[in-house]
Length: 358
Image 1: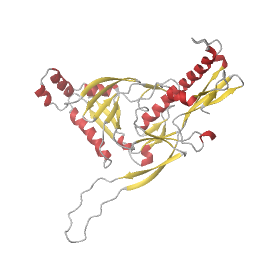
Image 2: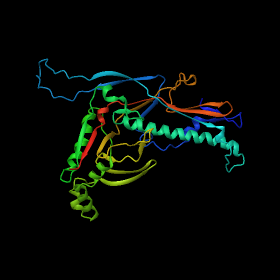
Image 3: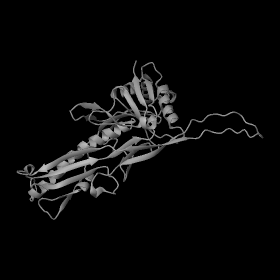
Image 4: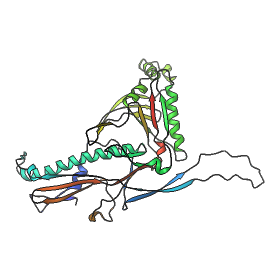
């Protein structure tokens, strides 16, 4: 159930769902960005259609009068069915946690029960947000991975029969960095095909990759001219209107930004920690990948129902918080769980990037 009976006042309950909605977890840079199209569904699986539009191909010239018009190749369609994955966390509050607890309120005992429940739910929520962020972050790379060990849970490339596109950005001092960045932007537009215009292309890169790009001599020259007020020369520089190495404070830490055209290079502000304590970077030092904004139905999150009678025939929620109530007059067991289906409809848009410096 989403509510737990208040042990001090049995006539009242503590709403776990409402409490959960009011918490601010420590992870969520991608999860809370609005990137994913999120929806609760009634079923345990989700089917969607893939439309493979061929590239436009030129035809031969035809006669004015003969019936020799050229038939244009149509799109190929197929349906893909996917099932959800599960993250279920458990914790609880024991009466021993309350003995000797003193707060600055008069009715300290009642407040302590509620505070202990909220504290435990906050702990579970932070772990859950960590898991969800990792799941969605890896989903934007085309393969949803298990937070425990990084193994692949959902492979959008295999599901759609596509291969991941790779691209190298040569950021060595003698390389033409502008051509490299332009090639990346053009590649995303090419992969998008007939699916409308591409908006912002967010490129998540490691610290080494970011430094190599923003410290490239071509960029340094442009900014030196701008700072010296030599406008005419700055206008002749191809990096005009770029923003370089701008630190941005987020709710999840400080990230660095660099923009050029419709490309926004960013560093990811946090590390992840596996169950065994191993620290995991979101992206390798000289690696990166693209997150494409402005393309509809690209990143999808469907939430299947939790497996309980009170959620039967009810659309799934992102998170379901439950409690057993008081057990043996000693403790309250609590669970927090999610059953999402996370995927990219066109995973080829997630370009795997390697930055070279020599």
